[in-house]
Length: 200
Image 1 (cartoon, helix red, strand yellow):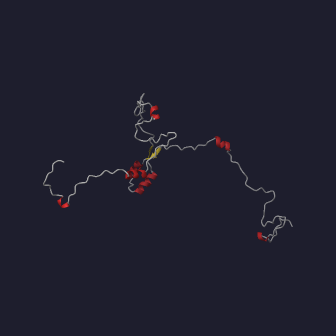
Image 2: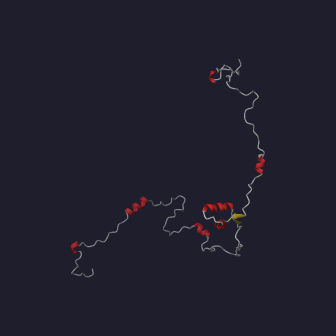
Image 3: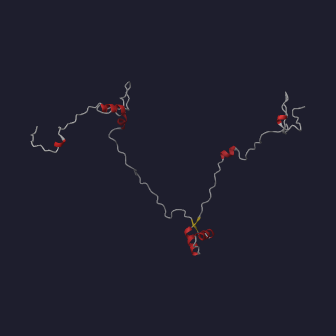
């Protein structure tokens, strides 16, 4: 019995027993041996070269030369006796008053002519100090601030101050003694002295 034999009553796949050395018989119809599986690849009409070489641009619609004048339409609707909003809308749909669309400003635009030799902004002035001297930034022995941006070979830059160092310096700073007033009892605070002492 060949392996492609299909018993008429064995419709369930679990009922078909495998055969040693052969494929299991199918329980459903399969195509003939000359059947080609897959989908036929049909090329589009324009090729890839045509798509790359030609760039189709959408054609813009023409601009409207006329437009509806709503004030004029409302005036005509009132003249026709349409006094409600619904009747005015119906009249505007049936009898719209059109007007020409403005193409631009009626007055001709004036062309601004730039005068010859015009300078915009503040004109630059020559500096007394040459730029090479400004860029080199020579060291000044009389400066009272550290130059953190300059690095000397073989020497570490001075350390920057931290919050801890600032608090430590503030704590250990010398405190100036405050001048103490002479002791006087509160009940004699407003009593004026009867003896005036001379300058000491």
